[in-house]
Amino acid sequence: MMAIFIILASTLSFGQNSKQTDFEKFEVKKGTNIAHWLSQTKKKTEERTKFFTKSDVKKIADLGFDHIRLPIDEEQMWDENGNRYEDAFQLMEDCVNWCSEYGLKVIVDLHILRSHHFNAKVKPLWTSTLEQEKFFDLWRDLSKTLKKYPNHLLAYELMNEAVADDHNDWNKLLVSAFSAIRTLEPERTIVIGSNRWQSVETFDALEVPLNDKNILLSFHFYKPFLLSHYKTHWTPLKEYKGPVHYPGIILTEKEFKKLPQAVKPLVKKWVNVEFNKAILLKMWQKPIQKAKELGLPLYCGEFGIISDAPQKDSLIWYEDMIELFEETGIGYANWNYKSDEFGLVGNDGNKKQKLITIISGKKTKTKL
Image (cartoon, rainbow, N blue to C red; front, side, top):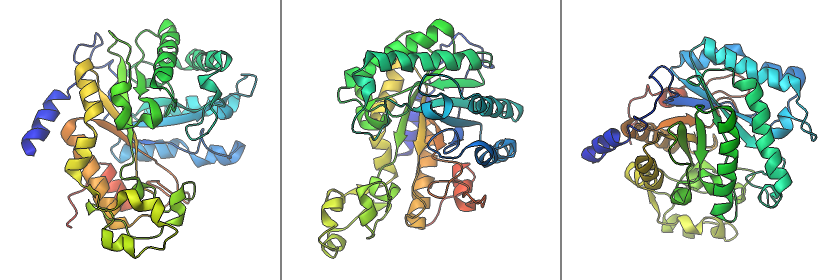
């Protein structure tokens, strides 16, 4: 197995043909997402200003991270007529400036559009040319503010977790959005993921613009879902409070038979299914192959486990994930920095020290 990791580490040294100097390249190794600040939040004015501050950026840098992924939502940044909320734009700029001061890089991620939410049943973005042009205009407007920052400091993520019925709908929209940015910023690194939640399974269907080395390929990884979203209130798993294990068989046949009849349909597909470090690596092969074929860097922009999941199993999973990132040379950002559900820090500011130690790459292996 070690031989496989050594080969991967050497073959995943992507992007060697870039025209930029080493100083100008946008390269990221380990980071964290700044969720629920300019995205997926009801916080306004003073509450939002206090939620994430310059001191948080310093703490992230002191922990040894080299970047943040900054999700922003259309409804947080612009009104329905496309006019800016200047206070939100100021917070975004402040964040980039803080990161520059403390040596962190930034990926600005256009997370949720009014016309596209990754879990919504109706997504007008895929059927309305008006909404598609509006999407491109959002990036044109962002560029007006962000293009002043050097390419080695800041990257753009086109859209978080595209979910189209047809993979080609995302591929066509991706090309148009990519071109809109390239017209304004020829060498800005652009982060691109596959259709259907940036999952590893769909990466072979992703069509990446050719002859452009300033691209960072990105996948998200929350496998096994029964562990990562254990008892999550926004999924059907909110009804499941039974056993879950990692590594090994996630739910045994014997355990399944003892479950209440009502929850059995929710978890039947996980019975006697095994997960471990080697299996996780095998699941990554489509994005790994795509990156190798194109000579581009690969990045995991989201991964994590809900805080209510069994702690020991969760920490071992995190350890395996970080080891795999290090052994394959894939950069990463955990979901997320500050929250009571997935955070490195709770909303009250208390640190989850064991998790921080693992995600920051300072943890030795837990004994089973």
